[in-house]
Length: 134
Image 1 (cartoon, rainbow, N blue to C red):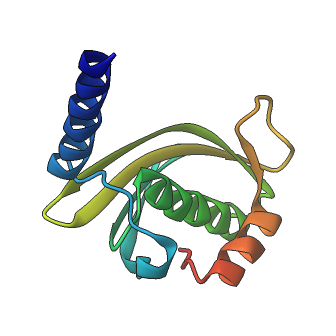
Image 2: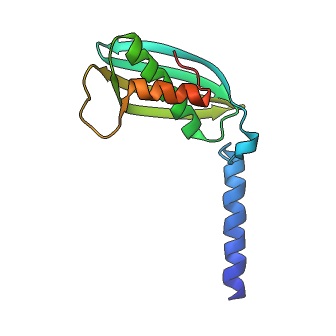
């Protein structure tokens, strides 16, 4: 029993150290002070759009993904569309700067799939959270 507890303690400590080493350690809500550093929009093909975002102060990769989603929603509205569908997002963190590379399709009608967003609702939510858009 003591050996099992010792092993559990070692595994827990290893997980904590690994999280710190790769920069994915959780930042508490009170420490969340995002600095949104810009959005680059690249039209890939008709309704397929790439969004590259950068920020510091993210708690985890989902903060970067939300920033890209906000950019996609605003872009859809600018182009006269009401919806977007998430294709993929990659997130990397280096030296305190988080970068997201996301691809969305934009459309006038609700696209097929489960990863769709209503652009107007999303932009409103982003504004309420203080997340900038395109």
